Length: 201
Image (cartoon, rainbow, N blue to C red):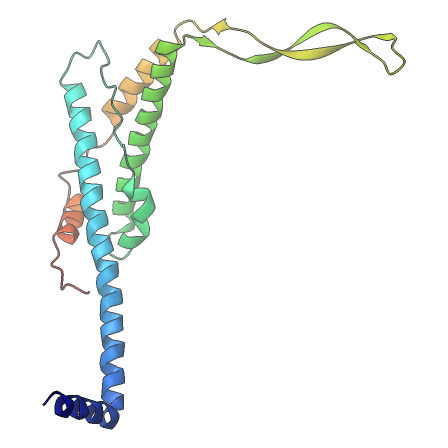
């Protein structure tokens, strides 16, 4: 019985080689497109989560005491937009892509300022390397030349008010950043993230 079935399958494949080749090719293309769309759907979900978390942090700060900047956590622990922007070129308009990119750019700058403020709080001194004349340089004959040669010396130099400047920058950027989670552009990303597994367009 089994041998009969195997012979039938072999005969069918031999007599319909073109059809089999077409089916295999179609399946390969379908799987490629499906994999690409799965990646786009997953990326959209991650981007939505990143935007939602960043805006939650910003809103929490704006509702707190404006005289004390307490935004200390990074807004973007991950950045899926920069890595996957090419996946959404056909789904979003240029101005919509610019809007999301501007949000991520400002959030990234806020993260930089948060890190800078942390460094200023833990080490309130700058450590610049400045040339300082320290005397003559021996020549090849062992004689000391009259010309002095600067050497690089590390020393601490306090920067008064540096943290206050950073805090003011943080405040300005945090209040100027445009929140986009409830806008039509993010709604497009939400629709992409909710596409069914069989969606291949």
